[in-house]
Length: 188
Image (tube, rainbow, N blue to C red; front, top):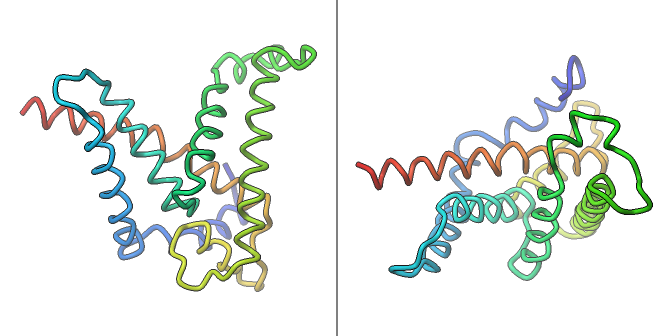
């Protein structure tokens, strides 16, 4: 969503973390998550493949991008799903629907869910800034260590925005691609 010099600066900062060996390093998290999801399937029990692939995609993003450990992953999953559940096209196509109705209605639900997810991400960014990032390979840790040409680091708001962008760019699209891949594997 950025343009011009700001886009080039962000791209230069982010690109090294999404190529070659760096991406292959996340293979273990992907495999573990997919295997755990498949192990939950029961013979003769009906399930929706898209639900399974969305669960896989979200957990991989939470682990590999956000760096969330298994002790906190459920809380983050709930917050993300709550936020995603409030995103309805009419809210974004029709500005007149974006009204506070005394804390009720879809716009208020969206604002509450966004505030909760933002607060969790802000707390995670602050927690990570306090800790030792050496040896950490999730995208958030790498972004916390990244520096612009002038030596400056990304602000907490920039980091949060990047995490949310990566979440939305990767979650649904990856889940749908996986669902289609499973469909074609089954069919052929």
